[in-house]
Image 1: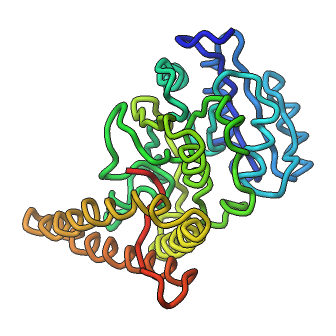
Image 2 (image 1 turned 60 degrees about the horizontal axis):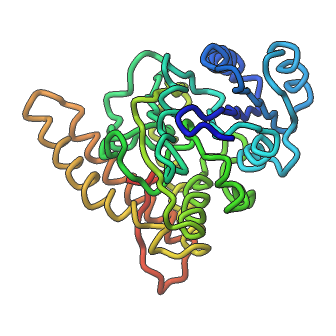
Length: 321
């Protein structure tokens, strides 16, 4: 019988490339150090036999399996869910390293029976030590991290950030896992698989709660290759397209509910805040304001590219706020 106060946990880490092995190793070690008796670690390798062999040898504490579904993050997660035996399934990106107390923080989020999904905090770990001065913090989602405007501890959200999220295992009996026709494959900067899953879950079970628990923190590595203006615009474009396809499948009411609030509250105030920073001697403030506005327009264009000419254009961000 499940102990609601102390559910068992299966941590699922999906990995696809040896290029991330150093940070992946740190992530696995930090996870293993936090496992309790009855918990487990499942590593899913995405169609890479050499990497599969290496992980199997290096981490005997883990259950290491090959992605049995289509190539990509959704297929890997579904494979991990099929292998998981815990009351709660935790999804951790292979380039995100948990801080002490992370797993207990996520576990504690399920003490309320109505909670089906918990999203933890995702802090950017910038290669080089800090974000570029031109990078607006409202765009943290571009690098898969928390961003200005997200609600606080225990607040309800539409969907969490996928680098650090936990799902009650029973939810996978309500909806059929992650949609393998959408989401990230390799390094292609697309997404929305978490949004799709959470919308379908809430439609199937309107009582299901999805909450944020930013105190359960991971540090998400941001390499220099993702610290460029060209990557910012590429990510904006693909996120817009992903949300356009999501809205076509599930409708704009749910598919874009968080994005409307993000644009009205976060982007608008952010542009003004960064412009005003110049008066305080921050010469990069106007550049941040310009990139925040331009990136929003590019995201809207990506969304519009998937819609008919008569469809409304609404910009997007990836996490529920």
